[in-house]
Image 1: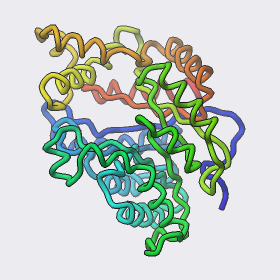
Image 2: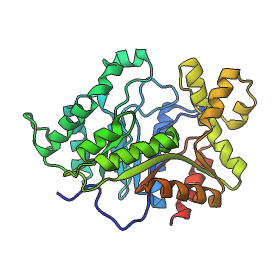
Image 3: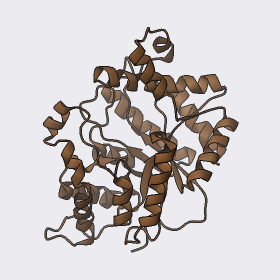
Length: 333
């Protein structure tokens, strides 16, 4: 089998992670339909991949069933690669995950990515409803090995229709995720927002310990980053405000709410604790005018030697969000 992803002349790819964020005044159904429409737009703009995420019991996120949503996205597009960023493996039996991706690859051959994470539910009640707890994340490595084995035919149970199919696996790095990705020889996805020093250390560990496998001949690093582009630096900063407030709200009240307009948020009195989390959540992202974003993104790529950048931008104004992606795509056209 050829390596996945295949070797390429060094050109940084841009891809999209959409979390199906719910906006104030809109429904979860509208958020899901917006994701599918956004995927068609991303394909037209030339983005390489379009990934969806997994969240459970979160009022502000509609994407709770990523493989189902990925099927809808793949059916609505024709060229762009489609995948998950990611399926949280501790929440699922590896055989079921293999079967789901086997169905996707069978229906949309050569276009499916299997992004896998090791996180569990956001709060204890959600973890209990899923039948798992925080300790299940420790079994990520063995569960990943089992999952991959259903595609290579190395398990006692044959994972039809996954058996013998070629689905590209990726590991989303949290905690020991970089070491797991290296040990299994699969591409790595790591967030630039987790702290530069920790990110660079994890990437170095991954590249140093990487073992070639049927999935990849050499290390492949995808950097995930929030990127907001607008005509002015101030307008780009305002695009970050709704998501930053949602994070601050979740940290102080235990619930991740729908996205509100930035003007409403900035006019809302915040407690000292809310202000602290809000300001922290605004940090570490790339935002600005097209030249400012190009400079910052190029610097990030130079520091990490990333093969690909997975861009996520969540804001209340959907039209402004789409324009941000259009301007970003134009920078690397």
